[in-house]
Image (cartoon, rainbow, N blue to C red; front, side, top):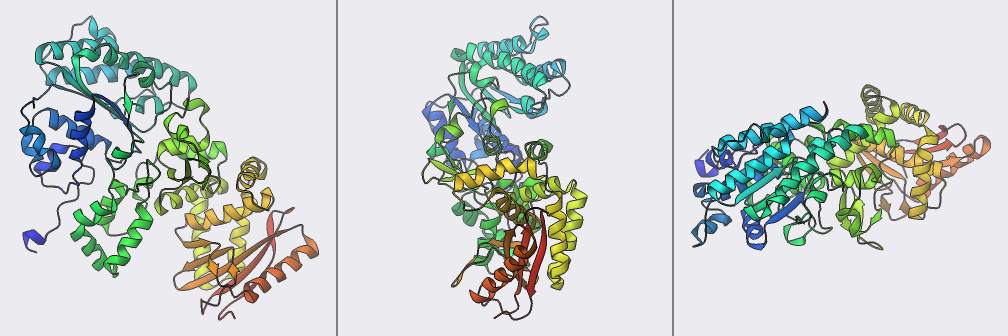
Amino acid sequence: MPEHKKPKKLPIGIQTFEKLRKDRYLYVDKTKYLVELIDAGSFYFLSRPRRFGKSLTVSAFDALFSGKKELFRGLDAEEFFERAEYRASPVVRLDLSQVGAHKGFETLEDGLKLQVIRNAERHSVAISALAMKHAQTAFNELLYRISEASGPAVVLVDEYDKPVLDVMHDPEKAEEARTVMREFYTQIKALDASLRFVFMTGITKFSKMGVFSAMNNLKDISMTDRYATMLGYTQDELERDFGLHIDRAAEKLGVSREKLLEQIKDYYDGFSFDGNSRLYNPFSTLNFFDEQAFNNFWFETGTPSYIAGYMKDKKLTVDEFRGRGVSRDFATSPGAIENATAESFLYQSGYLTLRPGVADDYSLDYPNQEVLTSMSRLLTENILGSRSEAESSAQNMKQCLYNGDADGAVQEFNRLLASISYDDFAGAAAKTIRLRGYKMDAGEWLYRSTLLSYLIGMGLDVEAEPHTSGGRADMRIKFKGRVWIIELKVAQGGAAAKKSADEAMEQILGKGYAKRYGNAIALSCVIDNEKRAITEYRTRGGNVE
């Protein structure tokens, strides 16, 4: 392949700007935002989900302030070096992803001291033994010595909240970690007159994390419109910079370029930090083009175990958050992590995102199919008790769907329904139907939403309430050439259940829900609210008229 036709290397796992540029990896140019921030102010905070490009941005700032002009050749920030007032500055860079608090106070202190030592060595300054007794005094002396020797310093902090997030489920350790971090960050505020620029990143923006009480001069740009697309890939950037990769993937998958773009958009696009702009997750996008296959890269490679545990402990369902209205304060001032609502915690962690609001400023949704599928899978694992049980059930269900086996499909549905801890989930169900104004009881909503999540979590092509000329069926499933149309009813057992099963099938047939699918299988199911199981069902296979 000619060199000009060869796609650039994909920077999977590359978080060092210098390596990325010197080794000629593909880079989506975001450097204009760096210059804009420098021109506009001096102290900034930006929160974004994990693996969204925060570390690479910090590394790019490091290179820019360190005067590595050659790395910016051909990029928007190249002009920054041509300014008459340009000057390099000493950079103090702290990577707190390498600092842990799970083993207690001393481990956290030692980790912070190591960060100080590495920066002192970088700038050839000495930290006194007295200052090294405590992390905060060592950091204070580091900033003072560097600024005294080389002029106002730049401070870059990556993953500021990681030490506290590590121990968030242990209140005593979390408070201890916050105290240490608060005293550490206070040194930045104390020496702000000796600093040229400060940029801090993290996943969350909960209060009492240390940084915001210690540094009230930080400008939070996490939801600022002009910086909404500073990290992540826009649609235009994807099509402009990944052109050859798109063509190669389309050829490999046997689809048109336009069709592939639709599929990529559905699966990996959708993160929004202002309610309007939509962004692709960089990690998933890069891995998709590398493997040329749709997988849940962002979620499955490093999903913190606390998300699975959090969902299980809080008895969270998936559908309860979709479309929920929230105010701007929900995102900008989430309060203390101990008191955070489930939707606030999931939004702060990146598992929910913002959409334009109706009655409120914004509404919540899952960013894309990758996150929705993965969260749905977690719910199924929590209900069935383990990943192995969930995988076993999914394999059985897929086999039933492929074979047109309605009896087996109902059996797997009942396996799930029997495992639901109704009392634990009833509160969320009641709250959801009240907020959404649904005309159904809590049990009906819980059964429907759980079965839908179960199917979505398998990675199936599932549509809830698909529109037809005759109305809306409850579910439509497409799997390996077969189409299933499912109608669900809830009844109080006995004759009522039998009658409801007949009526549901008549509804499918009479309203023509399946007419557009020549080989559709119709399945009407009645869930007995007392037994919490499908006790009656009807099926019609082949050509459903």
